[in-house]
Length: 125
Length: 198
Image (cartoon, rainbow over all chains, first blue to last red; front, side, top):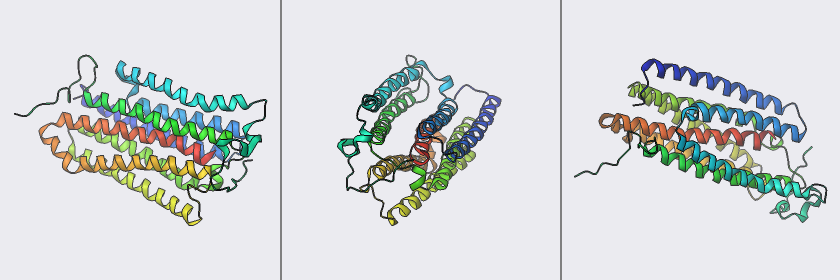
């Protein structure tokens, strides 16, 4: 089937349970950090860093990416490149707005900021 | 004469993968782009908006935390189902699949409670951009959970007959269904802090 012995499979299952434990702890840490009321920039960095570690564990152990075939890595490499392009768009928009009249300052002048029904959003601190 | 589909059990010599596995990875690549577009839109909306609420001010963090635990637990149960099949234990595998299905139900019930509370307070997707992105992203993710649950219900029921005739192919099916399910878990791992905690 997979060419692994019974003992190897049992060892794998113990690893899965350990990974589950780490994921559970990291979930608690993510929530706990959110109560620290960090600045928005720092909070985003910390939350995404923890999420990335969790994602790395799920992809690496549960989706077996630590021991996958080259073709899967090639597919994922192309995916990551295109995903990067998707994220480059909003980053470029934000970067361009720095030092000038920012879209945040511009408020309703930004098409992205337009609210469908003029319902005000609570202001972020 | 029955036509046998090649490389359903053993890997193709050129790719090193059995076909279903290659297929599911290509599908997951397209899924990354689908959710990636939504994350990209969220960033654009948030950075371009004059004000944006903190998720924890408007959404129920304890319920979402519970849902995170449920989903990562279901990732473990589905991989334990696969491991049980590799050990030849179909009964245990079915038990783990049933647990995975139960986790899926639990996740959806909690999501329904959350949606119900939002709707009760007249917070709809049309209310503002925050709720629009919240409903679209969690709604699409919820549809993926439902899709996975349909798969696992099939493998618990009529699909399990394959174990008697083609056990290796059935084991591979659980593996690729598991890959999909782990991806659904992975998306939630990023959705949870992005929408609820920031």
